[in-house]
Image (tube, rainbow, N blue to C red; front, top):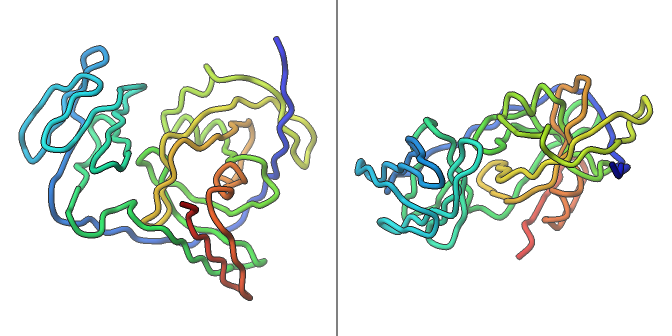
Length: 218
């Protein structure tokens, strides 16, 4: 089997919490699946959709590993089966933002709380990491099928370790959504998931003193 070498940096520090608010409007939940079809509850109305099917402006892209990929008003989103309903308000929507502003914490590190595929995670900005990086424990908690992904080696401060490559459907920080982000899953322990360059290259980055601003590229 061909092996690959990915470079990442591992670090462990404390984190800052951030809150997210729901918006009023249309609501949708992913209640079940049958093969490639998804049972969605849209504004209280159950609807079984096949890929490409649309109901009340909600289009099903596909179903994979307990997640439904949807498109609403040209915006893609991911719902986990049985998770809380998501608001699709006509005003500012979760994930519709374009800028993230972070303040440095202890040691000058930039940390925050966000979500991956709809599940809360602790995140650390790491410009020295090639990709997003997380531990196997994090990947298991997020329900990622990383063991089926391409396998190679990752360079860490402690030398090379085995790693699996996965694709994250959705990474959300504040009100900014980034889709289809490459990540590596490694053994060991980290206090945070590292937001490396597979995520950061989607932004223009500007630092002024202790403030880091990430502006989403068009």
